[in-house]
Length: 492
Image (cartoon, rainbow, N blue to C red):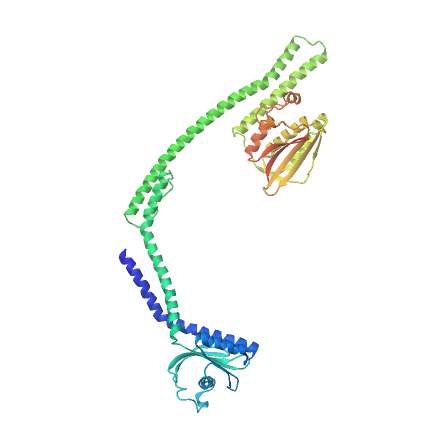
């Protein structure tokens, strides 16, 4: 570990020094070039706006000279100085002239003016920037010359070996590289540390999750060392414990299901026997009484005998309907009834049901209206959905009061992609204490009224079983002038 860290740190500092030595000069020259070009651009803009002899131009040039240590001269097209940063402007003018004319055109040039080494840094249509040695001053400069937009000439130069600027740039450049290398070194050390500690932390996490009975936790590191061997053995132990727990949970779940099923069946059997006995007691007693009356010739006229026979037939029919409803309910509750989902027109089905109930409506003096005859398709078991609607509609007819009117509405619930069917009938609201029980088997809000209309108390229980099999909602809402039953289906 120590050797690795020492090597990493050594490489970091070595690379920093190497990069500093190889690239600092180019970085410095590039910075000087950008400074000169930016300064020339400012002067060009000011001279174009305020004129070449303006105070603004002189102020900007003085600022550049003071801040960056530049030498600047601005001259007109005849090489007459307009602004010069030096007291002796002849040397700067000579350099400007030299850059615009070849040495052969200047026989009286100052000594040493033509002896220089140059390196072209930038050349545009109006500007040229070179790195050159000035033989007169024995110094290296970055020199810029060219034409301003108003036709004036400009010459600027900055010494390459400016100590203050060089130290500042060098420190800044070295700081950037040092920070970069420090980040690289920290990242490498972090990676190495994780390679050592990560397997151990992973093992701790795996064992903690196993202690919480989470056997899906796995050790998946692959470093080919002793920790990996331990991880593989922990994985084997986890698999065996998971198997054992799975078998135990399966056996326990089956046992609980058997117990729950037995208790449910026993409860339903007792409830069924009790309810059926209660519901069949009255019709059986009536049938027995009227049958004995017929046998004993209690009635002597044909009308009385017909009445006795009608009572026996009605009660037998009532018993038959009750038994059929109970068998249907039993199949739905135990899941023996197959629910077949299909797409059908709910509006057409409801219109058909209302038309077929015309005789029943006239018999009870009830009016019915469907407020929306637009074709709307839904998904469901059409036969069972029709049974749900008929139960609601039949109850509405039998229990309609007041104006004796039934309003059937079909509405789309766009956000939930559902269709709700409402069956509203005028009359007395259902008592609040009965709302939670009307879906129970054999529950009757008004037993006397139920007997009068022939209700068995099973219809709404069948509705509940069908809607739960379809995984959709249903319910009842009280209003001041009546009651509305509703059910929902998925829009098709």
